[in-house]
Length: 166
Image 1 (cartoon, helix red, strand yellow):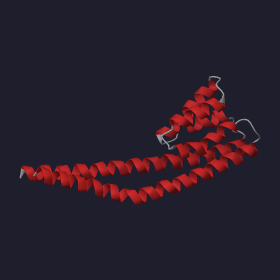
Image 2 (spheres, rainbow, N blue to C red):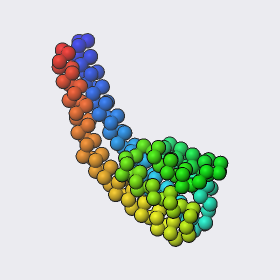
Image 3 (tube, rainbow, N blue to C red):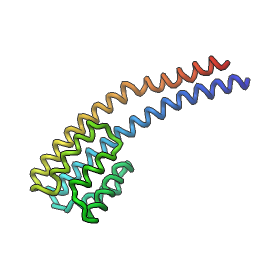
């Protein structure tokens, strides 16, 4: 009986490992989605209300997920401490939990934000948003394609280990 309970726990832990990997994939997609939405907020604030970037970043620093809020909080803090937006943005983008291709969609904004007229900034933000949308679609497709496989693989590996140990 104890062997059977142990085997069930091993199978469960394998399935849980698959679930954790799926949750990581979903978290990544949520970060991309939240970042894309934050670019819309920046664009609207710059074009419609002509709000200063440090104030926009300060507002966005309270948003979820944490990676996004931390990004904007550090940008706002560094700008308020006299650092150049170009350097701050580039440094903080490199620290994001994103792939290199996803980071490359955001890097050009460091050359535009706060330097040009609102129309040009809006155009650059729109380009970055569209690029992020493509990455979001890829991430969701990967999540749908690989998610069930990860769960199945985790349960299968747990079952194999349980069979070997019995």
